[in-house]
Structure formats: C-alpha cells, structure tokens
Length: 198
Length: 198
Image 1: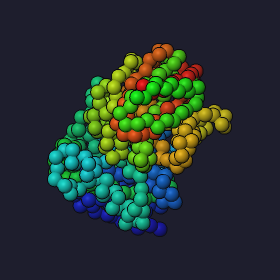
Image 2: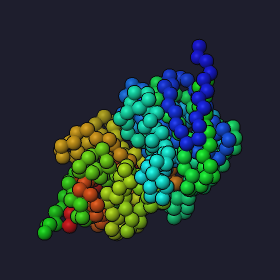
Image 3: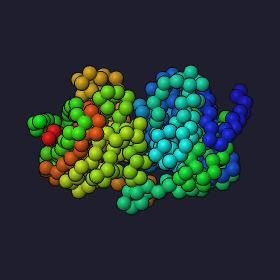
Image 4: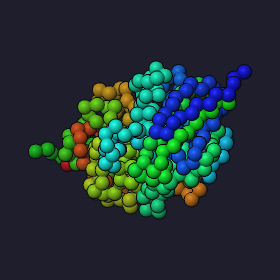
C-alpha cells in the first residue's frame, strides 16, 4: 500500500519523480497565479514522452478535459486527467522557457528556466540526455486572438488550486515552477508549487 | 550559380533534399486540396530541427506570416517564410500521421504515412535515427472551435498554389504528400506535390 508523499518545489525550481503505473498525483499552485511546466517520460524508454501534438489529435481538442488522456509520441496513454480543481485554463502551445529565451527578453545570464529545471531533474534520475518536449503548461493562460496572435496573460489560479493526474505507464514526472518574471504569466512573481503522490 | 531543380513527389510519398543556407525553394500543391507535411533538420546536427512550439513563441502567433522566421528547438532561424501564394491556411497543431494513427482510424495495415515518409527520406540522406517533430502542415485546414475543439477540414488550396521558403541554415528539408484519405483534409484524394529549388 503506497503512502502519501508531498514534494514541495520552491519558486523557480523543478523536481522529478518516478511514478508507478496506476498511481495518482496532485499538482498544486501553492500561493496562486503560478504556472507549472509538467513533463512525463516513459520510465522504460525516455525516448517516449508526452507529446502535445499527439494528445491534441487523440482528444480532438487543444487540451484534454478531465476523464481524457495525455498520450506519448507513440500515441500511448501516459497520463489520465482525473480532476481539474482550477479555473480550467492550461496551455500546450508554448515551448518551455530556456536560457536563449531569457537572453532574447534581455534578462541577465543565469536566469533560471523550465528547460534547465527539467534537464537537472532528469539528470538526477539518471537521464542526462533527453529531448525537450512541449510542456503541459498547467495553470498557464495563453490566449489566442482571432488572427492567431498569442497573448501571455497572468494565470487565473488561486492558492491551493490543483489538478489530479494518474500515471498510465511507469513514468518520470517532472514539474517546474516557471521562473518567468518578465512576461506576466506568473504575475511577475514566481512562487512555490507542490506535487503530492496519493 | 545554382540552377533550378524540381522534385516531383507522387501522391502519398515523401522526398528529402539538402538545401544550402540562403537558397529559396517553392512547395507546390500540384492539383489542389493537398496537405504537405514539411520538416527541416539542421544538416550539421539533426538533433536540431524546426520546432513548432519555439516558432510560435518567436513570432507570437500560431503560424508565421511572410517575412517571419520558423526557428529550431534552439530558437535559431532555420527557414524564412518568403511568400504565400495560397489562401493562407496552414497548421502546426497536429502530429504527422503514422501507422498507429491509421490503425486507430480502422485502415488496413501498411497504409502510407507522413511519419514513414519522413523516416524513409531521412534514412536515404544518411540519418536513419531522428526525432519526429511536429510538422509544418502546409495547406492544412485545421479549425479551432471556441471550446478548443479541433476540426479537420478540406484544404483550401487550388492547383498551383505554393509557398516560398528560404533556408537560413544548411538543412535537410523533407516534404510529404499527406496520404490521409479517411479524415477529409485532402478531400479524401491524396495527390502529388512538388518542391522546386530556385
């Protein structure tokens, strides 16, 4: 019988964990208005990972609804979206932030990034060489204009808002508290998140 | 001085070619209503390739406009969108079709796919092991509903419609005449395309 485990993730940092098939977990926005970049890699083969473009085709929608699956680049269900205790605004259109992104935004060198957080977490799990997939950008408020323009809006989540996901394969799950403090998606105030395995 | 080269691609097939930095090329819908899956890999390192999610951030829009760049997973410009001689409807949301997709749609085993066409073309260029990126789905009419639903509509292109792109890096460009004949994006009638290097 598995016991509950809570992983607190400080603002701007990331953490990774191996989640066994069948186990559910919650991802919390602890203080509110904080985006989470979430990634999932199949434990038996990290070349198979959650793929936004395959999930969109699988659910015929830009983001799954509770009860639907996220699938891998081999179209295999990897996560089940069990519950959404948030305003329901998430994103799978924009890439993880990385050092080049912050350089382009005029940040000083060394700015934390979701890509660095992902790579660091996966290296700690024994996988220093991975692809960088399109993240599941939980709580992230990216609006599309009628002309296809992208608007980066502050997250709508409040303290304690969360989603529940279930692993459908043994997988590495990585969550990053997005350190973006130049565009306003985190209300320019990155804050902690938490991952709780039930 | 480079001479013009035209590569005719039969319906349901793909072709790949090395394009030198600075060289422009046209991609034609020969008969009309035909989607093209286009991929670009950096010749010096095929682990760097065109990335839809990085391009969306780069142009702050779901698809570039003429005069804008497509960028790689390292945010480096790889293709310049020089000219759009079509109704202007393209897609970068849906994954390349593959054998698993056709299995799910009830097709018989052995149905051609853009993923197989890509892998075959890149193997022929000496790269049998590649990631399968989100394609640049030229001429592809994917509509988003207000609820985020995805609708697969017939292409709006007419015979001879084309785009002009310019390589910004030495890159492998692969084009596939999408063999999708179950959902109606190709009007259920896959047809030839052409790539013309100018």
